Length: 434
Image 1 (cartoon, one colour):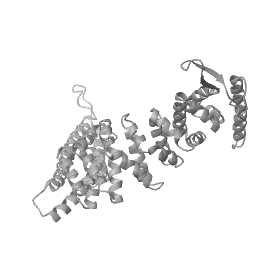
Image 2: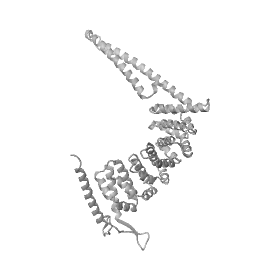
Image 3: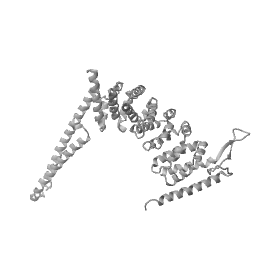
Image 4: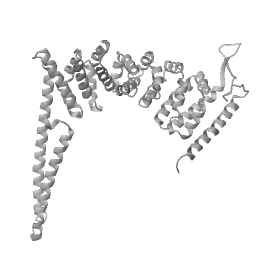
């Protein structure tokens, strides 16, 4: 067992082997050097050169060492396989008393969690040995420590990239989502169990085929409640919003997220720098639907919050996500464009268009183009309700007085805001150390 306590022990053994090989190679070369002085090259037999004897000995030495390494590696793999098989047998055992069996299965689950933590091949081997079904069966236990041991073992079995996707599919196919939903439906569960369930939802929802299965269950309601409940700065809060983001990538889950009342909580969470980027990413999926845009606009001070993000010069990713949400809102609704103008978005957009990232600059310019249309209000002709005509009703100068020409008002506002923004940027630049 000492050989498999982690990758550190393997690296130490590899270093020792390499050191021994280097010492032997050095010895062969050194021992071959004196012979070169008295060795005469035969013209009749060009194969007899001054360097052939040490090279021949060196080649033989390397062959022996490589064969020894291959044997050692095969032996290590066999021993590791035996350890994995032993742990899986304990999970699958039914021939002992209930109390003793539970204790043994808990220890076996903890051992599997350790073995699968940093070894992708062990995860695949454990899945093929049948470790997933008994671990999921352990979730029926009433003991919180059994549930936690099982959940984290399942989590480690599903961690990984493309080649571990089969494990994620197998975990869901074995009924993990249903078992976790049963834990949720029990009502109040231990915080440790709740954190483990959130981590598993995050891991399993990374696979596209699992997003709809998880989203159609009780998972969304549970994640929304957990996002509201956990404290700021908690790792569970970050795992929760990341799981919600994974689910939001499926169009079928977006209406479910909106119906859960998540949007006000997302807007309130903006400002917590640990989760703000993920929150804005979720909003970028929600804003793609009419219901999502309505929910955002109806949230108190939503435009003020999003406009404030445009000024976060130290968080370009947040600026890009916020500008995307505002651009989607401006494109689809004249009312939303008017609300943005009344909130004072133009100066922030101009500053972002000057000093933001290339993507943020592009989106800020797009919003400004749409805001030019906000000076026009759609009215209906008195003779026909189906024939609209545009008339100018108010200016964008921010002072509320009416003007005859909306284009002139927009031009004046842009020039004034550009002058103020440029002055502010230059003043800020002069304060930097030279």
